[in-house]
Length: 226
Image (cartoon, rainbow, N blue to C red):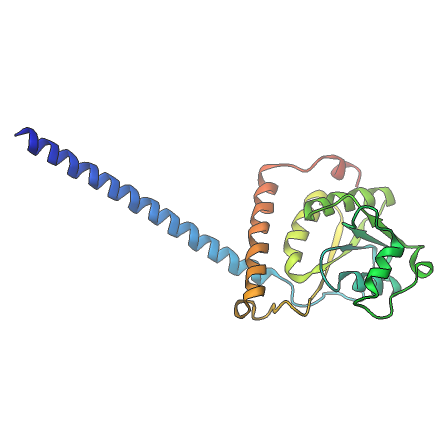
């Protein structure tokens, strides 16, 4: 066989290997995409559509800042004696209860006075994300010796919040209490560009939190002190 024929044969084999490698990578990529899309469907299906057991009481009511309607709902719940104390996690550093209530007056009616809620509202300033909310709340729950909480956050944020909270407080009873912002079209999320982007972003954050929960362990302080 001539040198030219040998080189041609080698070139064909190399091209075939490259083609098979690309085909395998493409198949793997398609499989991952299908798994991701299937997970998205399951994730959206896990988002609560209503509040379960709205009349039940817990030791604490915990509100995660960062969305409309959450603080108002937390204050309504504590006024209705649904918990012994209200813990608001993720408040900006330096913001006290007076400033927080004043800021609510711009968008909400019937905001209570400081005197009405000072007895039973506690602010947490150390959290800047959902994982931090869970750690901050776990420390406060341990200090209060509380064993149950009602978790108030947006419906779309609830799956990731429950994942983070149950990770650091596995022995506590956590009752989800979702709120539903008017601007979030949860029932037909795919029809609204804003809601669709919000759901995709939250789903990807949930995947990151899930992966972290599978490969790392929470600090034992949150487990042993409960």
